[in-house]
Length: 291
Image (cartoon, rainbow, N blue to C red):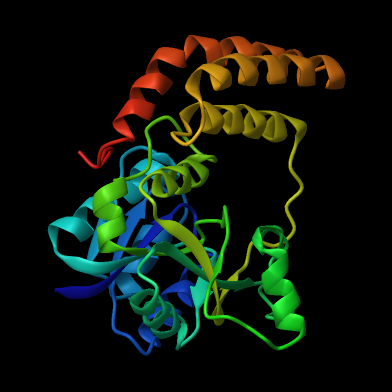
């Protein structure tokens, strides 16, 4: 069985791609690289072909979004017999021992279907701000007192750095088609939990996420709230009837509070999508979305 397939979804990645790719070449554990380009308009494709080694490159004619693009690599990983899959953002990179630390931990704690390293900022001087929000308080306390465990369970961690075990992927399937972008990682972890796989952070492993400071517009923030509502309706661990009632109402109340017509419109948009969301939720109880 092959060891590890790294999946990178690229879109106008020239700022980061060299650092990302070179880190994989320097890993202590050999890896194959599967790239899906989401119709970049810069020199990403030309640069990759001229300067880098990879096992597979898909040049999509349309922007597939995060989930659908990754699903191409996830299906390939299962078909080709890879033991592990690593989802790596284009603006992220690993250290020499990252894979070794994660795989060693997974072999010891098989109940963890998804593992993340500690995700640092580009300067390696502090934890990534969003990653810090994912860290269990117990882990941060143990780190301070130097009493660190091998792995800590968390409800959520961003998919910039995910090690997924083959058995987990076979059981959970790929990313749901309900999410064009944002929310699909939450949904995947909800479904993993449904199949009794846990999500963990490994303190001995570290990696970089060079996201920088991003200020979101109100439009993006409102769209994320809508996708969070989709994630809650799609969550197989929660009561469907309650979610169908609660999530549209939550959007309406929020829309009135912040005086946003878009938020209220999204409540209707959510209700219209209920049949598709329920269908995809039911598919989530099987190994789904990989074609």
